[in-house]
Length: 404
Image 1 (cartoon, rainbow, N blue to C red):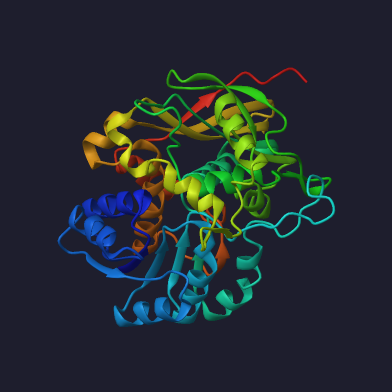
Image 2 (cartoon, one colour; image 1 turned 90 degrees about the vertical axis):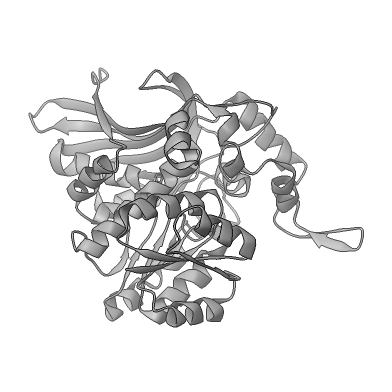
């Protein structure tokens, strides 16, 4: 399998290093910054090629796919570039994978009550074209979304006869030494998902929105991380899981912490979360791009980081024994381990490993499909087994159901 990997940042570089160990795919690594693409290739495998590419240029992407005879396009860029890459893959009849979906736009009149354009809407609008071509777009196949969706499908298939709630819960005890504020993932994407109206799914109401950081709850994470306050954040799982998994309620909550939320609120008050260019000394600059440029690159924080990151899916409902059930299916990565084994910090490594697993399953034929599909549309067993084979096993925490 030949894969065009677009984006050689932290996640893209980790993807290349993980894939090099499996040897089922050859990569052409593309980035706007050729030096960055070359670095990702050179630190992963001498089989890989590096090229310069502007991900906004659909024609250039389509041409590169054809020039190198690629079978798949792996999108490791931020969500701004989803649609030109998605359309280029469709034109080329190649498999498409991403870890974040097309951007949302809040409802103009009632942003904290009703959805406007939802995450992924632009991609699902083209689903029939993908199906007609017999081609597959596997969307949201990082860790969250991605592995969290696989967990939801696994719970539905093997652990429950009826599901009340599916709640994706993300928490960590990571510490970055030497910085007062240093996000461990793309600040551009973090601002986007945290300050947009969060989406909730309810079977009796469909999709609706609420205010950012709403419904705070303390969730106890495993592996010694312990209790963390989590809040509603806009995320793709809430848009994907209800399409294939029957549940009464689906939410996503993130353990951000009071300080992080305070910084995000301040950025919003000052207009520094805006992506609209403003004039500064004769130049046009995006305030959000300036914020990102002022902060350290998350990919380079690994040597200063310590601790664990946990991604998982909490499910409640009626178990297969007919009684109430509550489980948390999760995946933990220790930063010390990911740095020692791959030279990639825990958050980016945990995101990158899942699309590598998915591509290996597609290459072997264990996963097949056409159209625009989320991870929960495909059988979870082969994915969870192969993830464990990669040396990073998942786990299941059975909990005592809360009294109704």
